[in-house]
Length: 90
Image 1 (cartoon, rainbow, N blue to C red):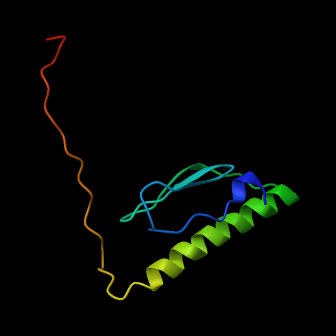
Image 2: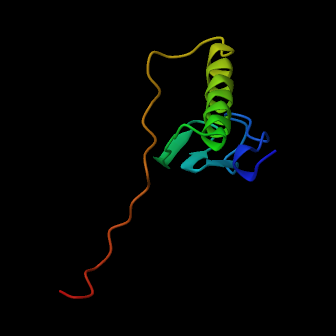
Image 3: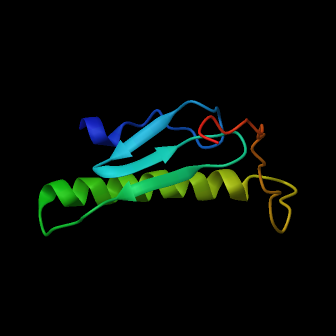
């Protein structure tokens, strides 16, 4: 299996797994999955492999969400703790 099509990505299973498909990165999380980057498709076999890997990853995400018994209409936003610091230049 090509390096960009690893199958170890289990949606929402942990906060560490990452799957890379070409220039697209899927970052796993127990609360959210983030997609970053871009992915180009040409009319070639390599693109077909990337498209199938993306389809498989998205199907796994859909299946995980469909398997949730009580999905809210919208998930709460994840806040990032911030700390105010003194301006070292001011």
